Length: 244
Image (cartoon, rainbow, N blue to C red):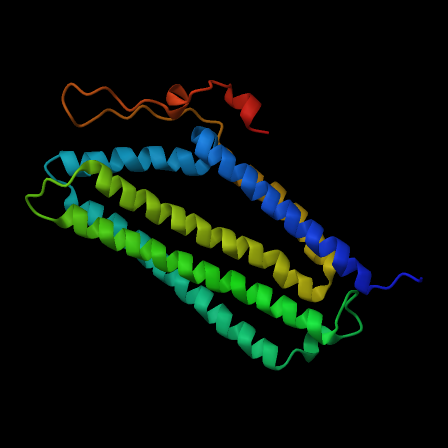
């Protein structure tokens, strides 16, 4: 049986998605087991120190803290709006997809395949919208906790709200990263596969952390400075062996 260009979609598209999913599973493992080797773990260490400084320093810098949370909230809201707008744009494209059915596109351009492309891209944008909305919810909750006067709210509650907001922010960005190869799938499976490989290399460069975590001094008298996460990890492995 002669080779047909539609067969490329059956091989290259699942391969590209498997590469993307495999990398993010590897990143999730590092984030949960050895968070100091990831940029997200590096940032969370600084966020914990920031929250403790704000909550335990008689809230002298509460205006600055609310400004910081307001900036994060505005960013999450803006990205949620962008994701929703792109979802509407995909709906408009679905009504007129003649542009992506050209003979110049080397791949499967059948109506069924085009519908799968549109739905996959739409799901990514809707997932990103949901994550950014949840991120806004967490930042609003942290805003309430920090601005509560004469409160005995534990610092860990505020830390949880701030870190969860950052985690949902990261998940929303990951959904947009997945949408990039799917968008190029409209121009054929070869651009989609090449973009998936390039995206993994680029994300690995930005996600890894080789710096030692800063030992922030606690605001509580007699309390030890923040311990580095690698010192609390059950298995001590050099960062050079963990970061590829």
